[in-house]
Image (cartoon, rainbow, N blue to C red; front, side):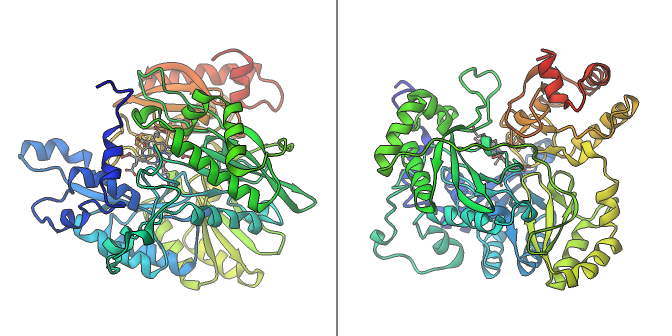
Length: 555
Ligand code: SRM
Ligand code: SF4
């Protein structure tokens, strides 16, 4: 049968899964292996978990004729990336008791815990539940964690806009009780009608579905990388509504020219909450009904949009919502960086943004970040907000408590750690890659810190250390650290080899393009040395690196 006419295997698994139950219970009971059954590996994603194995130990274990060292990663659902101090302590403890101990902040404003063995998944989920945390729908063919610009000082109405992340997440949650039955021992549903799902039905979406909300002028969420991007339109501190952008997505596949990164297209403006939510829901239904269900490489909304055309899409959206979007309102982005250090919002509350290299919260030889953040949480005087740049904001601190929180941060050298870090490192991001990501071709988060050190030496040589250059690295072409939106993007092609992409802009409105292929470290540094020299000598005043290479036609 031709690939074109047949649905993919994952589609069959979803439909046969009894609303995402699969045989997960049986898989969990099987003590012979640390893995779960193959079909369940697809189903469990909808519960926010991935089966993985330690890739560093594959060879050694294969030589000993041992099974791979299986474990699971759990990703939390945190719309807008917000947790209370009590929830922070719970995450800290669960990471220590059931996982590797590292709390990994993701590029989509949530956290992942890795290395959870099969028998520890249920205790971990139950402990999360006690802290009012869940991992529902953070993976799988469904709406994922909803992003929102994280810096409360950005706008006096930040809280009002931020609330949309939660509303959208709730609206697009699956109706199945599978998560509650399997992990939280809720009684089995007798009447399946109670979980009928008009949105997802029994086939869910053709692919993952991502939504982000940006509050201009900061595009910290990289709004155009989402299937649906909302851009808040604010006039005189009043929320007028949202520009709606559709069809963003970054992933490509090496050697498959049919795949491409695409920025979302702004299709209009929704001037009320009702219209905004209705439009988002309808967009999800269009993707459900028209998305490609045979080739998963071409199943994201961006391909649906390009296949049928933007005009068709707008028409279809109008049919489904019963109203037309208004013409898009003006907006402008100037930035997408985190505002490190102390900031204050319009209500006078204080926020401290801590630099977390590649989102890895742990105590290491450089800084005891994990202990410090637990100490802060123990005071009960600050919330925590994750940013899409993989950092954490100690937030909502009353002016009267600022000094005591500052003292904790000083005691653990978090202030000096954040202040002493150079701007290029502070703006860099890497995805997880080895040893847990099964798709990694090259290192990313374990290697970028070392490479940045060498790039810093080059910047120093060319007197460019103050530049706010955005460098991002991913271990494969999926682009999880949004490397295609970096000024310098390094995309893994093989172990130790990267494609170099150049020319993204500073605010995430231009994709970069490939400059050189399959470079090893030495070649990367050699190329950058030459480019930095040109940049230093031929740039226009105030011109960013990405704009420079684009103007010069270097890519
Ligand atoms: Fe991603 C798959 C990690 C953000 C595009 N991503 C994966 C998996 C789950 C590998 C897998 O399928 O087994 C990685 C788990 C590694 C591990 O060991 O933890 C993984 N992705 C991540 C995270 C943790 C990177 C990070 O270091 O922060 C990010 C988690 C986000 C979250 O909290 O939900 C992460 N992934 C992204 C982004 C960035 C974004 O959304 O802003 C992208 C590009 C944007 C996009 O979606 O187009 C991204 N990840 C992918 C893709 C390609 C999807 C596609 O359209 O083809 C895959 C592979 C897949 O789905 O088949 C993938
Ligand atoms: Fe894994 Fe590739 Fe995503 Fe990196 S970009 S986490 S290597 S899937």
